[in-house]
Image 1: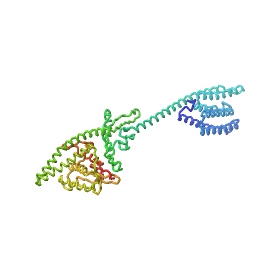
Image 2: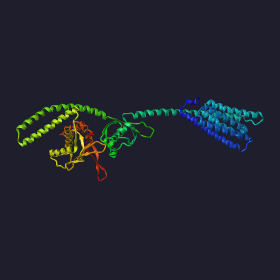
Image 3: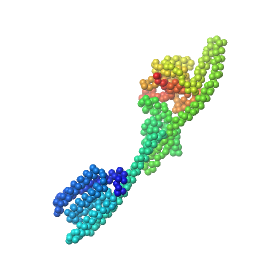
Image 4: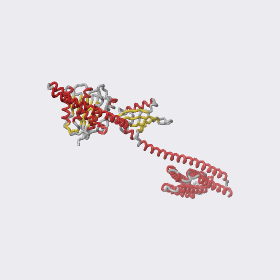
Length: 548
């Protein structure tokens, strides 16, 4: 581990240099303490000891400065420092009289530092130098007739070798563990980077949820599906997701579910931005898959919800279904034209023979309805051929006033039941006959469910700067349930035993054929109720194309 420092990781190399700096700072402190001690003049040669300590302090400061400024040749700097330590300590050892001074313990500092930062061979070599020096000095004193200290010097040497061996092995193990941790950290960092990349670019949404419904993490796909960043599985928009999550926690065998959510249909977010409002009725069909993360022993529960948007798949299936129905409808419409023509021709012949006012009125009703049915057949054939309408700008207010008068007379309604609001002279690009068919269809539905009181049916224009012109058709009926709303514009889907389920489908197709959009929306009323809250109500909204 210590033979070639450059083979270690950057974190381990930084640890070595920090340890070398800590060793240098300790050396300076020891030199200062020794200088103060020897300056007291308690020894026989205080001047020599003070000079050695001063030189030791200067050398320690210089080596520390070098280690701070020049991070190169680590082993050379380390061994130079250890050599300086052994030399200065040996001089002080001699000046103080050998083992009797107790300064032999100072050898422990450089030898332990060398054992931590240097290979075992160099550490044992440094310990052998200190031991041989102490044995040589003790032998010299014994030969010269002084007190024999060879045994004590030998015991010190044994202690130095033991300390060096133990400290070196412990340091090697710690460095090895640190190197392993650094390597594992690199691998985990790379794995996390790959995971973040995969999760961020995954087409499926991924949501990490706690047991209480708190969202701890979600990828961009999930945030887009859920209408932006959120913290909890609550609120009106995400209620189906919360219900499915609780059902899975109650019965883990139900690992998948299908839900429909409107992520932008949150009353608290209403009217925040025009972009949010324009998407408030966007519905997403999601397939959910639940999985519990393995957090055994961590005293925490984390569950993962995988969100797959199957709206596109359902739309493709719906398009195939509509294409088949379109061909069938076009075939039926084509077959209807022949008997319709016969009825019209017979009606024209009767008009020549029947001159009574009652007969003329009945024949006119037949003629008008034949013309209307014939136009509907033409519209169906146009839709099947994807033909574009040829329309010119029309004045909307005059058209609505004329339509209201005709509708009131046809259905024998009081004039105040159908109320026109927000009228202004605006021009829209829409085929008048197409718009008439759309509004007649919407008004017929409104009459069926409205209370019949004055202003129970409202038709009004909404124009906001920067947004397309809208025409709203609203009644005070019970509204449309979410279950029915999901299939509202599908062909042949109806909740009425007398309906065909084609009215709203053809109305939307006519709007699309005129570059407009028909949808059913929930919006807040401008007025505020007595409780201080705004009332939400449903209405059909026709969004016209911008005039160019």
